[in-house]
Length: 176
Image (cartoon, rainbow, N blue to C red):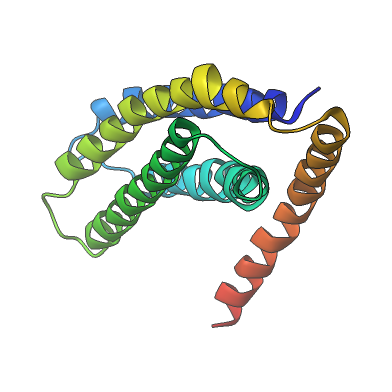
């Protein structure tokens, strides 16, 4: 498997989870707002989609590409992808703030949460197509076979550390 294969497998799970979350969120009302559901969606996006998946893209793939001679189009697309990751992070932070307000009993947050989950569910497929169909295949040619093997090994090592990172954060939050 090539590094992009692993990233594309992760894309399929992101698409499925966000489609499911969007369907559940669409039915959400102020009365049926479930903060645990929202926290679960946030945890998935922050831990899996952002930290694990985007982490491999930004910290490993994009960093390696920055050391290569990228063409103008590929460099522009890579910058767009990073900006799109930042947009998604901002939207998730908005959901967190809204959900915290709802937990304190504030009404009027369910519609905004639904709208943001809907935005994420429509944003990610377009973002993913840009990566799967254009960016990954176009930039893979920058690496030789040995570099691709090493990158895949780095992806696996990155993933192996994620569970420890997540639960060290859980420990720190419980300590506080």
